[in-house]
Image 1 (tube, rainbow, N blue to C red):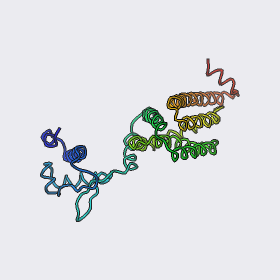
Image 2: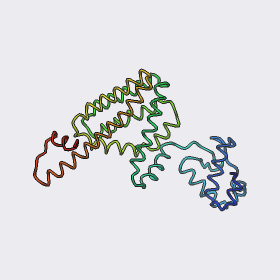
Image 3: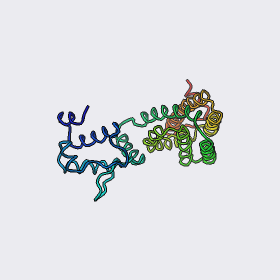
Length: 263
C-alpha cells in the first residue's frame, strides 16, 4: 500500500510519518545515515502539518529510529535494542498472563537458536557458555544470583546462534524473562534434587553444543523445559501443602508430600 493511499484513508499524521519511514526503509530508498527530506517538503509530501511532523519525528527520535541534528536535519539511525526492549516491556507488562506468553516465545527462540549454535558457534561462544556454566555452579544456592546466572547461560546460548535477529528478539523480552527466571528460582530452590538438575542439565546442553550434536542439544533443551516445569509444579504443591499444615499445626514430611502429589 503506498503512502499516498494511506493518507486518503484517514490515517493520522503520526501514523503517516511512521508508515513513510517504514516504507522507505523496506524499499531501500532510505538507509541508516541518510537524511530525510527538509521539513517543509516532507510535510507537504505526507499531507500533514509541520507541527505534526515535528511531533512525530521527536517520538521516533525517542526510540532511536531517527536522530534530529540542528542545522543538519533528521538522520535515519539504527534503534538501540535496549531502548526497544524497554518499550516492549512496558507494553507487555500491562497484559494479563504475559509471562506464559513470554515463556512460549522464549522456548521457540531458544530451540531455533540451539540448532543454529550447534552449526555456527565458535570458540568464543564455547568459552562464554563455559563461563556461564561455572557461574551457575558457583551461585547454585543463591536464588537471585543463581537466577541471573541461569538467564545469562541461556542468553549466551542464543548469542552462539550467530543470528542478530534472534538476539534482538531475545533481548527485546529479556527484562520480562529475567523477572521470570528470578521468580521461578525463588519458587523451586527448596525442592529436592533441583540443584543437581540445574547443574547437570546445563552442563549436558553445553556439551551437546560443543559436540555440534543438533538432535541431542534440541532434545536436551526440550527436556530441560519439561523437567523445569515439573519442578515448578512440585514447588507450588509444596508451598500449598506447607500452608495447609501450618494452619492445622500438622508436620508433613517431604515423602508424604511427594506421595500426595503423585496420587
